[in-house]
Image 1 (cartoon, helix red, strand yellow):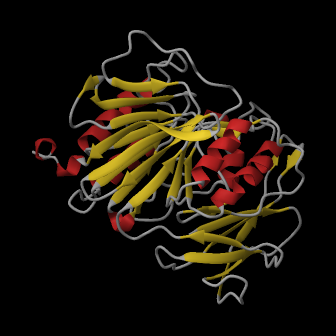
Image 2 (tube, rainbow, N blue to C red):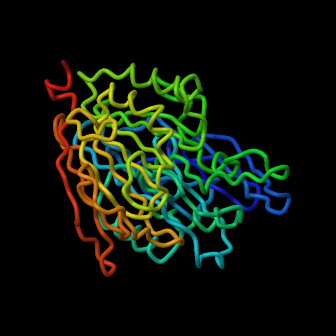
Image 3 (cartoon, one colour):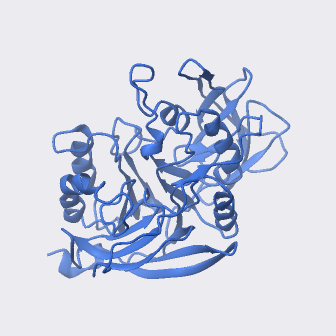
Length: 402
């Protein structure tokens, strides 16, 4: 488990932790400290990073960062077997939170513990509501398919975003991939893309059985290997022969579906989309990678980018296919750009449910054959289950494994 936190002043990159609150922590790990500057105008705080463990599954640990006795955090490790519940949330942005002056402290992710984040989430009143709804019910891990802070070159928004999500991201693993709002590349002045994202949100790309070599795409297992999660990069090269394409081929080929019941993938720009917003933006990546996911019998693909919700049936090559993934767009976390309310008519036959509302989703992998997907709409500040579907593992389908 990796813990990442930021301090304004110099501080030791030490995490002290144990299973009893307020006591002398029996364990500690020392990590590293980095920082970055942006456009010569912004200088980040000290970004500390430490990997702790080994840790027991389904166990609450208490911890503090940089020997700061004034603040104690806690997190619960994921279970080592099914059932396992993911929260999946999309785009959300910043709007009114820049008056805070303190830097955020801690974040947790699987192989990386970080304070705060969700996909297309942002920092608006709807973001706050979405986070409140997520916190109201238990879960094991949060997945975010890109567009985190909506800093959009204004770096203090990364700090306010960290403060906003810290209560949740310090308590459960948050696993993220990048969106277009993380690119922040300025010709001549800031030629390196994803500078802030890579500095602040280090994912376990160099860990596990299939290291990718890039923080922009990676994979990991949960529940003792029963579920394999693939995080893809929409805004780094993905064509055949590129590093990401070659890595994905090897990663999917290494999955043993006799042991891995479910395989899910996350990507920012949706490969299937009947909303008028961002039409066709994921098509090139779909053309280059869809066959790989189909051949590996990936069960579901979750995307962000479009600020609305949509669920497709199992699809391959734009046609209904019982051995293709279920495709879901969940870019409705609460971004400042508003909802994408215009859809293409008539609704495609492959599109089962679509609605332009803010909310979040939950994927509960119940057992080796069945997972329950639910979409929770933010309705008058109350979470309402507006869509749900049972997903049967393709690994258990004889017709899809001939």
